[in-house]
Image (cartoon, rainbow, N blue to C red):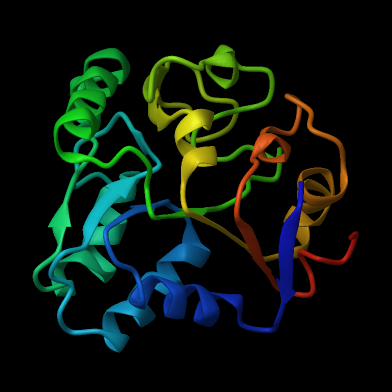
Length: 218
């Protein structure tokens, strides 16, 4: 992957700045590190008119469930993003119906390509809910698919954007911290494209925001 790698003690701050400058259509991801970035982005900007927020993936749970990516983003960010339009993945519909509904919403209200997408990386090098070796990695026609059995906890079904949507995004921002992600970061950013490390299959205008612990094996 040809990525611009930026290592700092506080990568969430730079991610927040990129998000606060967003225009058009942006996709949010789950996780503790993005959570910190979202809260800061909300502090940096008052008027989010014209911005559409989408999601990279979602667990098949209600929006008020502790495992909901939307629920986390809503609590720390979206309730404060005045003027933004939010497109929630309806996890409570289940993986197949939820994916079909979100794909339809993308087709009706979404752009041909997202302007910005924020991604994390799992310890297994997964992105979105695209796990190592899963059939969803090979999807090239659909923009959103259901994942019945995720590759790691919490072991609930998921809804996820597909690789063509990720790779078509105008700006792809990875935000990764922690020594437990160091090997995954090496596989994603220094290894060859490999379905066993889904993040390595990302291709486009990529910025990787890492802390020193996550970048230790690069």
